[in-house]
Length: 615
Image (cartoon, rainbow, N blue to C red; front, side, top):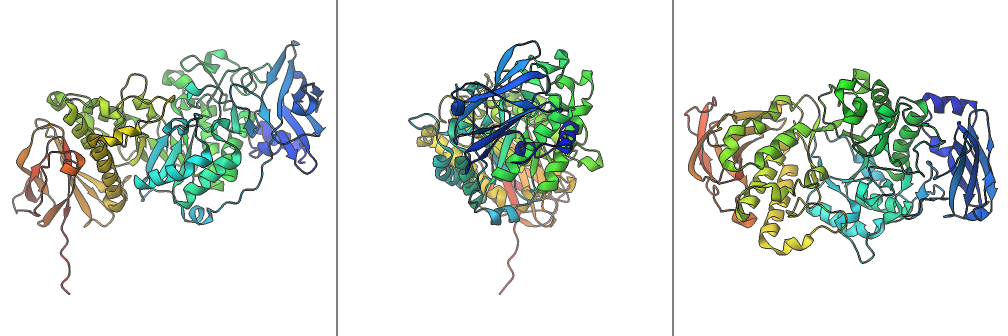
């Protein structure tokens, strides 16, 4: 059993004890059936532990000069439940779950459970060795809430039992990564996991530690990366959690004006405190080391950069320093770890390395692009010409950070409507608009993320209490939309021009960004090999053009390689079957010109036809 010494105490308080989960909590020896309980509670006058092993009769813990309470208890069984009783200096007794527990009781119970960190027979070494940061590679993320993707007769599906079906589905839809909404322990289903109480604890809703490891192992064997959603900045205020742990704001701010997050009903952690930094950085490294997690999407970064997310309150230097330290420690251990910021601010250098003055993330959600894009597509096409800049403005800052283009869970809840149902028009036009939106999303610079259900046109908003409406795939329009999505994502992964230069301006060039009267956009996407490029035309009105002209960079022959208006996708079938020859007439400040058929509410993609060498 690892001892806690003066050096550990110094590192913990200075924010540099990054394996604190190996010291604190219930360190269990299976052979001896004994557990060593250790907890940091410097402002408590007394701490005892109660559980199945002592018939819930308090066993007092001794305290050292650093405020650490500990005790060794015999005859402890794996899965025994327990809690700490902390007596505040005012004499009040409070029952707390173990913040370092690796597992917890099923809700609504709030006890911790004694489990050891067992070895697991991982089979993902090949995947881990081969994986790299997808800067010049496809990144297509399926964001999902595990408990409402599909439910069984008992409610939630076990991590292990869902693996085969989920993996087949992800592969069928060409996703490179799956992003799970929080899988650490939380008491309230309706919080979706963002109000945590057990940051080291695999949520018991879906199974055990080994069950989750099995799921991740199988995903890796199928060459699918795993991203965990994580909210390290604010905590659940339930009495059994980290909140006011020893009767004082131990891990959070002392000033309630910046501690109490009234919008979310949570409490903000003081990430400038050494003990809070040690705790949270240990959390991240724990999931990487013991569960082989490939990355984290950090929630509510705006709330970390600025106090309460309000820029007028000034930069929260303590939290900013935490983010830098977090990224440095994670990337020192796992250089290819994805660190994705969900950040709505314009704070500079979010995706620059900490040593270069940045926050240390390697990707950031492009919230501005997402908001502008959805506002535009929700408009009736007749009004879109007045908001033409919504789709062009994103190119002005597309290379200021390493962006992911997100259509996340936040956009399909709270009366915002599902992605498909945001679209205007009649039934056919809704689907056509949505296919066009998907085409724009996959051809605009930036990596990709989409929330579950959006791939087949879920019609109602996401509801965590029910499964996705997969029965919609029995209806032709949804099945065809899903076919279009799969074809688009397959095309995306095959075409280097759509991902190689996502974050460099030479990878994108407007052909015509100013055709607001027709609400038509045209642009080029380039691969590193500049002879490998795509011509993309987005028509955002229901007007069809039998002859539509645009400029192109080469006197060459072009062919249509994708069209969202194909009949098989539910479109009207206005496609270009024949090859398209460029003429020497200049147009759109380009040296040459082509004329094509342009379908209504569609994305058309052309590629220069390469002549095959004669044999």
